[in-house]
Length: 597
Image (cartoon, rainbow, N blue to C red; front, side, top):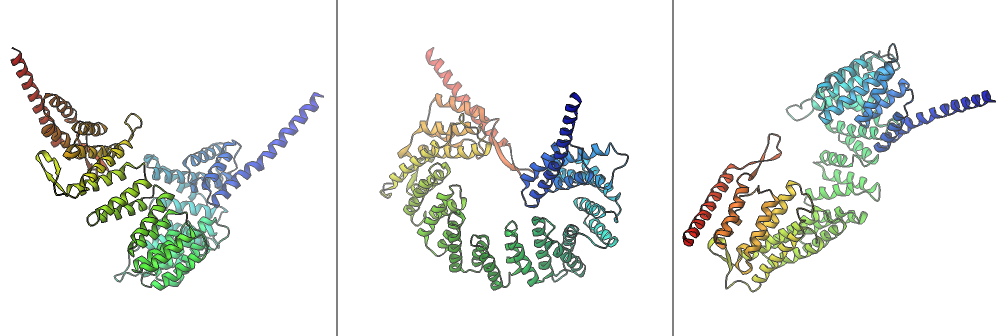
């Protein structure tokens, strides 16, 4: 009885083991299917599942996995495949070609990803060398000869040796009777790059050498573009490169047809296709409009071709036609803010300002973060500042209602209101401004509205202990706080010195006393011309003491990045102010002591 139970259990285990093998194969097939469909996340998940199963690996499966992990690309999966292949190699006296190539593609993937991520620079050359060595072990006439040629060429290409990569592919082609569409896709890409890299002649045309490389590329790319065995993404890439090849050769009709075919196969390359067509037909607007009309008619939901049509009309100075095309685009995608922005810009060009503002407003309702719509409304308001300031204010008030939580809009509006008021003021000692007696009747109301707008903007700024701001955010928001201080400091009709002081100090604290524009001149002026007395000398002394070591300015480093460096000139000014304040304090203390005696 016991022997019978053991036999039954063994049979069940064998059955389960056999059943598990197709599942593992299916998961690798599934990963490749997802990758072919452009679903990289699903492909990574499926490949990870297959790798995590910890089952013995067969060399051809590892080769497939290595090529897939490199194509995704995913450095963790590449490393996992490499480890599995190296583990298998350690159990064999000699590695079969499939295992050699699996390791070769893994090493190549690691080198490429290390270059991209700028990591592991010391081992990159070893990875490349190992990949090439593994490829060179496989004879051209072996079943894996073509795969080896592709590995070697890809490795040489990644190292920047395009000529050697082209020669390696040509050598394999000469050694065999036929090659696969996958081989043609890589060969076409390399030949295209080789032809494109050669300089043109004095008239700007391709040389005979370049034309030879490009025609060879066209032959290979045409084969790859029409192949059903290649993934859709590979076919689209071959089709687009084929269009570029004909374009460089000056073959207008062939290039036009290839661009249209690429567009028809999917929209991933749509922007490059449309730019290519615009360049191809730069001297023949009618041909461009004909091509764009055909592309736009392919599907009732397509808007990319209509975007390009609008741009082409703009370039040709055809404003009315641009407006008609923009409206067609809006009809196709009414929930897309970009369509409303396109129509708004066209309406602005024909002078329909109110209608343009309505369209920008609609875009903002659909997408409050739309910079083009916001910029359109703000730009329109600012154009009215000089000629129709009341109209500018009206537009800004509308924008505030559309974006009620944006402090920067209020800050910009405050600038305009301040400018409108300053036109009718007289400058007094210390930069103080007073409204002239003959100023327009609404000037004081505008000034009070300016104060309110800045107060609203400042109220929208989160308290520093409620949220951690990065450096750029802190400085930008501190600028708003500082600007609010300017209004209640310099305009005597609304002057509130204590509030101005608190705002200036808050702005300095938000920027760690390293305010980027200047060394607290507004606060200094406030203490010099508005406040007097030893209490304010003490405050100024403390602020100057903080600032003398903190003041920074922006510079660009060798890479063009913005960096902060000490501003020694302003720090020296801070030290002088600190010493002067301390001297006044000590003088006041000595005077008090003398009076007490």
